[in-house]
Length: 154
Length: 154
Length: 154
Length: 154
Image 1: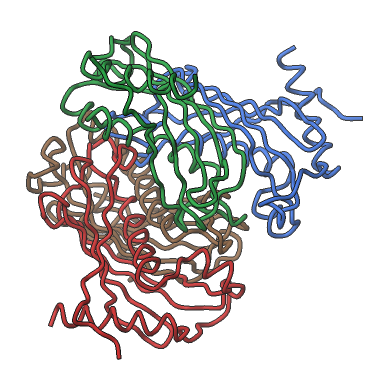
Image 2: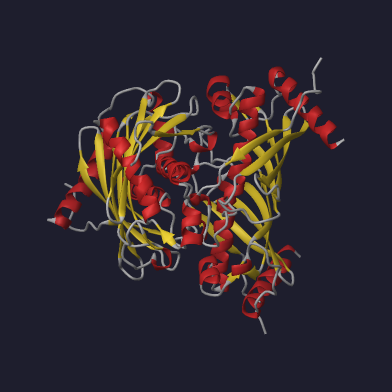
């Protein structure tokens, strides 16, 4: 039986660097998709024991995204890091949807929210093949994350 | 009077380069937001006679994005450029929404669609101030683009 | 016999976009390596009929860089495009060295210079194998470019 | 008197992510300049108590780079993080030169070396003004770092 009692949401701390900013002296819009993807990969690495490189190269598993969305709430600058919380919002047969929220690490102010959905495929078929079932080892952890997220948002 | 009879949708051709790709031998997901933003800025430059740098630095006008969304339809590789069509979907009092579609320049295959909404603000107030009205000179051209888009999709 | 009489140096025009800039309202230092690599790949595509993606994926040829260098002469902004000239400075048995110069497309002011050396390898061996001879078809064009560059700087 | 007895070289650990890689299944060449700049800024933040954003926006101090160089020794992949050591190689009247070395965090294998020189300027004059003296508070710490680096390489 899965234990969600001790579960805590995954938070990825991201230092905001000079190179992330643009001439408006705030983080360039285009960087936020990188931030979201980095945070999702960090969850996969730390909670699922997987990363996209090993999945692709060693396990022949690809996970192309089918959809991403970002809503910007407040400007972000290098004055404080971002704490990017990643929840598993939904686990389908082949797809996983993540819900992301970025807060100022010191101010606790909400900076952005986002969502992203990926689909498991056979990697060598990434340019054409259809989806495949999520491997059981990944599914178990992803579903525990999803159960935690459901309890959190109760 | 604005002439929409000769209007054609704006298309930004983007060469896909090696550095855009990832280890799955397709374009990295994070690059598509850059593609969309580059294409929107190209429309502003060529149709509206503005670019974000001059707007910010010379005119004190900022246009932070409040929302972006991307739907990925087919993998993209450097085998062909992208033709990224940008339509002005909606012009509000302070906000503009763009609808973007990326096709393979040779294959004509649909690769991705996206939308993005920005808000006009006073640039020095970008970290806090509210929206401002779209300047008339910009509004006129943006509304002509929007009229063309409506006719196209009519 | 190769005709260098009609040879002209390859110049890659690069629009400078908002996302290239940082909070100092100039192009972020880190972007210049991308600019140089894009320009080198553009020369390969247009003069040699090759691009890194097809070389890797279709021909099993990798060209990892062993060295890059950049000297920054003047700040770059989106106020004008860059004209990036790429010369083939040296063709060895396995290696090619490029010499790059970026000028303001309108001002003609020198903005940066750079050099970069790559080595031909068998792509699947990129993580360990030694260099391989430059394929003849590539060598012929690269040597003509190098002859042109020598005549130019003669 | 400055105490270099307890000095240790600054090392910036960098997780290598999926988005850093290219279709050769190694880190894209262009990313290494970002890695080097991130590591230098991390040293400034942690040892000097400064970061480029606050220096520019709050203190009107710019530090444009005049030169960067990178030598690539072995391919980098997401299989292990990078440990990027940053030494202050030279402190001039207005300029600082950094020497950087990237090793595999688990393998300890040498991956790349690099150097970069920046010059202190008045930020609002970044597009034209000459260099200014390094502020004393920065100079003290930078010289201690340089003394440590000299002792290390003794």
